[in-house]
Length: 177
Image (cartoon, rainbow, N blue to C red; front, side, top):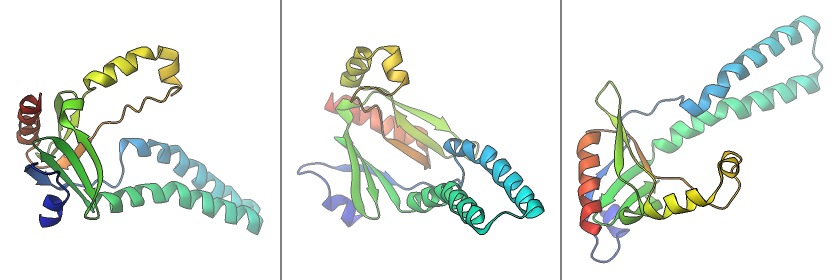
């Protein structure tokens, strides 16, 4: 907690801090692994059956390692994350160091996605300036990711009592208003 307080701005107060309580090994982004497993399973089956050359085995091992290491790296990174809400910002610490911070006044209203086990994710909708920037891009530009508008918002993943944290963030947002 002392390290978290050391990263605060002068006059800033830490209102809440927490860590992910449940860290899933696979996320929605890992849906690509399903076809990859099928592809590599078939490649190994036919490779054993038809006798692949050593070079093809090496490529197969390297590519499969790249695919399957992503969830493990994600899991290990989330184990070191601590989230904080101050009276001004949402802060993310990774390995004890501040890795991201967003001012509450720049973020939209917080929302909650609850899990069946009582944990949940608190995220933030588009902020005032981001809505204007997003509206400047046409639909086609947005779909291809053209433009230099970063529409990434903090999410406090799998924390305990997410509705309480959402209400705390909303209250702090109103106070900074």
